[in-house]
Structures are given as C-alpha cells and as structure tokens.
Length: 191
Image (cartoon, rainbow, N blue to C red; front, side, top):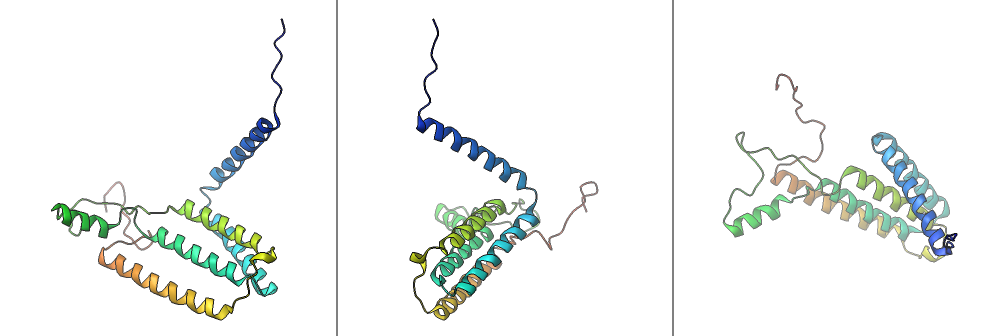
C-alpha cells in the first residue's frame, strides 16, 4: 500500500519560501556583525543617497523630517543606559535604599555601562528606516507640501534641547556611553 504524500498547498509553499529567505537574511546579518565600520559606512552612504534624492527631487520634506526624528530617538536610546540611574535612585529612595545609585568611590562595586539600544540594533533600525524613507520618496502620496525651513529649525531646536538634557543626565549620574578615552588596563599586570 503506497502512502501518497499530501499535496503541498500554496500557503505552505509560500511559508516555506518565506522561511528560507528569512534564514538566509538572518545569516547575512549574522555574518555582518563583526564589520562595524563597514556597516556604518554603508548606512552613511545610504543616508547620503537619501539626502541627494530629497535635494534633487525638491520634495518629501516631511519624510525627511520624520526620519530625522526617528534617528534622533534611536540615537538617544543608544546613549542611555539600560538601567536608568535616575529611576533606580528614585526607587531606592522610595524603598529606603540609599545604595541604589551608580558607584562614586573606589571601593564600590563596578557596574559596566549597558546600553538601552545595542549598537547592532541601532545600526539595523537606522538602516531599515533610511531604506523605508528612501522608498517613500518614490510615492507622490508622501510628498506633503510643507515649508521645509520651519521643519529644519524645529528639528535643530529639538536636537539641541534633547542632547543638552542627555548630556546633563550623563554628567549628573557620571556615566560615559563611549569606550574611547577610557582607561584600558593590561590583563596580566592589572595596570
């Protein structure tokens, strides 16, 4: 008695192909992980092409503004610690625990800086957003007529205010989200 294989439905065929493409895409992303500089150069080139498209087409300023706000939001999440010291300190004060702040003395425990948004996710989200923004510039429905200098000034004001607040937060809670300029110790000697 021969057991006939069940016929593959169109839905299962599409699902299988989608799954295969998804695995290949993830494999390429995994292979690109160690090449940080090349990834960011590619994202910068894509952003340059996007800006050229905006300037040459003389439109889609609202798409550009939206992309700028989204990238600013990603950048702020990249700069912030995963566990906000101000929230931890506020919770510690409410709970009666005064030791819930970042270490400020030599003998206190070292706590490494862990980002709210890791570098790879920041790169991936930014690159995907730029690609989607670039795609949107090819559709007339997204070409909303606006007076673009107002958007530019508003974005600059928003950027300055949020960065000032972020820098004040970094100074107040004594954390530096970047690794350059920090002391590096030799593993053998401890100095």
